[in-house]
Image (cartoon, rainbow, N blue to C red; front, side, top):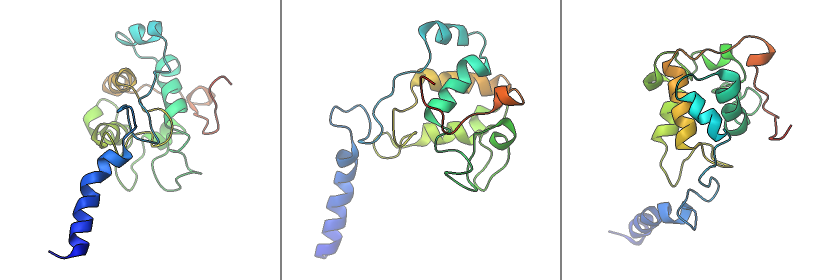
Length: 159
């Protein structure tokens, strides 16, 4: 084994630790998140998930700032129903009734906890938010048309 091989092995072994957040709650760029939904909204979502009340706040706060046509041309866009449910190069972001086939959820669930988390910058999607998105997709992913169903990539919390 040469010096280069040893260096690569040592670097690869240390990478997860180097990318982890100092307090163990996420990566350096994506700390453990806080839910954008109130306790009452989370309780309500256990029985019925509403796009405007439960889904839109999560997608606008944690997803659409990257997953839009301007930021990632030709990739997954969550700006509206048509784009979010259209087949792209890597699959369909949201498959109503099938959370296990929905690229949005499989990407969130399969990301390495210390290196590749969603979103890569800002607070991560919480387990509660993931449960809401999963239930919404399983229940058919009802997404309104028009203005109510459009997500703004430039939206900022508090606006």
